[in-house]
Length: 369
Image (cartoon, rainbow, N blue to C red; front, top):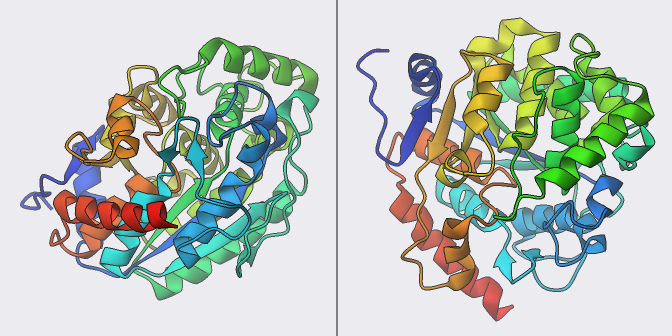
């Protein structure tokens, strides 16, 4: 669709022609948003994750994010999920996108230690062990198959599907899976902190691969085994959903470097879905100097397109939101994918300015709570 032009609220990276082709087929159509929550005990290793005020509180973050999206408040914990320093969860932007677009929302329980207090799609997963065990995720094949069925079900009802995640510690597990598959040979993944603990994550991943008896690239053709050894329980459900849905409709994979592992695994299992997959993320993640989303996606497949929302919090009156411009958070809870989807579903009528206004409204209410 050569005449198709995107609004300034959305930018594209990678294969621009593929991005426009996929987005044009969703333009003005009806989508559905899903968020798969999961816990990995990897997140409780000190220094690995800032997705919670303390390492142990990272286990509450996925459930709290899901409750925020569905209920507008948290039930599993007091307050709202924050990073050290009081920076709010990216679910605030996801909430804004879903409210403005009136897009249906479903939570998928990939496997949690702290379960959200709300109805979820269950795929038979349990929370993940630390990847240092070399045996991180159980029932991977069963969760994958259930996710595949769910993706197929949603694709029969909606014109496009958005899949996303909330799983603290997930950039470390993503790095481990991408290295086990040979997609990466060095640490290019992001962090919710501007001080990306690259050395720590690399050491943990190397120890995890050794514990599993895996060398870099050993599992290039067996991504589910890679997830079983060094992944997290968000992954098999989302890999299945991506394959199941993308056989029939376009899919926005909402998220950053965590979701690159999901895309890599899905393409290793079924390359035919390539023309129906676009990553949806944020300007903050794409411009992160401490990671390299473009190189990661190029390593997964050179034709994989990225669409990103051009959100800017620099003029926000709230310091907690301004922190996104300083390198904190950047992505999560499908905030980039949901924003791209909201703009696309509205055929460009929803803008970044609209999203920012709604984020401010949501944030003010949360501060009162």
